[in-house]
Length: 177
Ligand code: HEM
Ligand code: HEM
Image 1: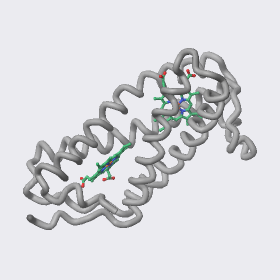
Image 2: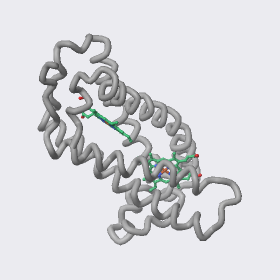
Image 3: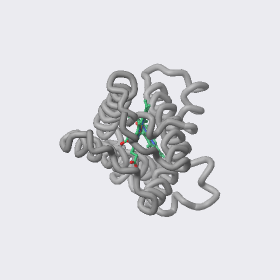
C-alpha cells in the first residue's frame, strides 16, 4: 500500500466535531417536526437544533479558514482523475451546503423574531431585519437544501467505508483519529 498521507490533528478534530454535531442536529430537526410530537420533547429539540446550528456555522467558518492555511495532504497518484474530482467537488459541496443550511436557519429564526437562546445576549439576531417574507423564503430554502445535504453525506460516508473496508488503500485512514 502506498503512503496516502494524513490530515493534521486539528483538521481531524474539526472533521469529527462537525460529524458529531451534524449527525445529532439533523435527526433532532426531523423529530421536532414530526406531526403530533409532544411539547415537552419538541421545545428542547428546537432549542438544541437552533443553537447547535449556530455553533456549526461558526465551526465550519473557522474550519474553512484553517483549511486555507493548511491545505489537505495530496491524494496518492493511484486515485484516478475522475474520482479525485468527484471527491473534491463533494467536499466543497458539503462545506457549501452546511454553510447554506446554517445561514438559512439563522435567517429564518432571526427574521421571524424567534429566540436564539444561547446567542441572544450577544445581539446576533439584530444582524437580520425582522421580516416575515424573508423568514419564509429562508424557511423554504432550509427545508429544500436538506435533500442534497443528506444525499451527499450518505455518498461521502459510503465512499469512506468503501475505501476503508473494501479497497483498504489508506484513504480512509487519512482522517482517522
Ligand atoms: C448545518 C446546520 C443545520 C442543519 C444541517 C439543519 C438541518 C435542518 C433540517 C434537516 C431541518 C428539517 C427541515 C424540514 O423537514 O422541513 C431543519 C429545520 C429547522 N431548522 Fe435547521 N439546520 C441547521 C441549522 C439551523 C440553524 C442555525 C437554525 C436557527 C438558528 C435552524 C433552525 C431550524 C428551524 C427553526 C427548523 C424548523 C423549520 C420550520 O420552521 O418549519 N437550523 N433544519
Ligand atoms: C456529517 C457527516 C460528514 C461530513 C459533513 C463530512 C465532511 C467532510 C469534508 C468536508 C471533508 C473534506 C475535508 C477537507 O479536505 O477539507 C471530509 C473528508 C473526509 N471524511 Fe468526512 N464527513 C462526514 C462524515 C464522515 C464519516 C462518517 C466518515 C468515515 C466513515 C468520513 C470520512 C472522511 C475521510 C476519510 C475524509 C478524507 C478524504 C480524503 O482524504 O480525501 N466522513 N469529510
